[in-house]
Image (cartoon, rainbow, N blue to C red; front, side):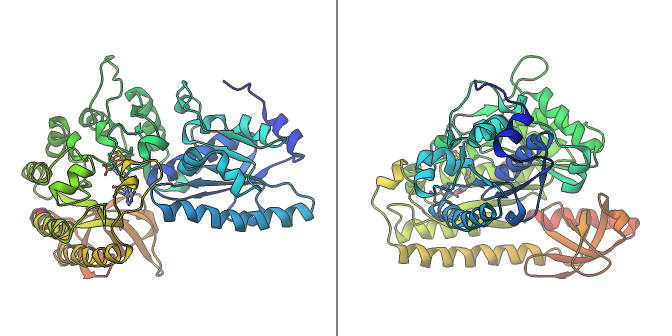
Length: 479
Ligand code: SAM
Ligand code: SF4
């Protein structure tokens, strides 16, 4: 482990004193957003205060994503912009440190400094707790830390201050699991995030209690493969995700629970039962399938067939009739024929997704699929377009079924129009309604009066009406 330096050492070496400004930009998934918050929390006791722009920052952290080529390349164009800010600051006698964190840092290491020499520090996702020490070192020389250390970073990352949690809103993400052992042939995650690790139950409960005390009402448990969770319980044995959800539902103040992202193979009986037994567990599940073709699923090493996936969804819907499902899809995986792609389109129709993400296959260096025979770009573009049309059709139909229904909305923040608040339905749709600001953080019945392209609009409902209509809402969502 690296020697620990205190914050005075950092100031001495950088020539900075007083509060320093930190600008963190997140790319990619929610796990990166969570990590960015935790980095900012860890640097707060070192005197760093967050700023909304890189222009006046003393430290810029780009928290990067390597999942697709486009995501990784975005980082380099952003670094060009930040380099200019650094040069300008230097002319004004101000030292700016640039750190690259996240999965690009993990995957490319030293290469980042070769391509972008203005970078002072490259830090992989497992080393964020070392940031204060690494920054102190980076003030004197360039530093690259992409180790998978033996200590648990969560033991060292500072919790957020109460006001910071409040400012981040009533809905919070909590990482409960990291890494992946599945090795899908297209995916870099097992290489950039490492092997599956689950946080112990007691530590998650402590974090959730702190969040709830600060006003958080909704939790989304996150992990690259969150339903493979098997953290140590207070009884010393491993707890599955279903049991963890039950425990978190007991935390006073927590009214809604969600989790993402799940693998179909890891939907065990305790988790399926939680969808039946836990009213706080929202009836919306992101369960990526990637393809509807068994041939492609096998080439992807997904370890499930189309029929097994459909059977899991059917079991979940039997358990909770209003469950809505979303997915991720990849089009143009190596060897995907038109027939394979038509299988994907037919699965979209069979499942009837409430929403879904779709991506063109992007070859990632070092993954098995990158060495397979590739599908031409024009074919990928055309298939992506057709798939997105099919997904949009189902999403529009799902949203249309909400018209006239009343269901509970957790209000999160002011909307764009005066007097309006925006919140989330149980199925994660944004819902806008005229409502007093005092309802932020409250769960309130809303009757849907208008369907927009990406959100719903409604009016506050009287509670008796809500009781009558809630069963209708349940029936509506499942189909
Ligand atoms: N663990 C999740 C699962 O099993 O589906 C996925 C996590 S991954 C961070 C998010 C999504 O990115 C994947 O579901 C997949 O659709 C997409 N993805 C991953 N690698 C990709 C690649 N090489 N090209 C295109 N999309 C990719
Ligand atoms: Fe990547 Fe998900 Fe497959 Fe793991 S299960 S390798 S995170 S796509």
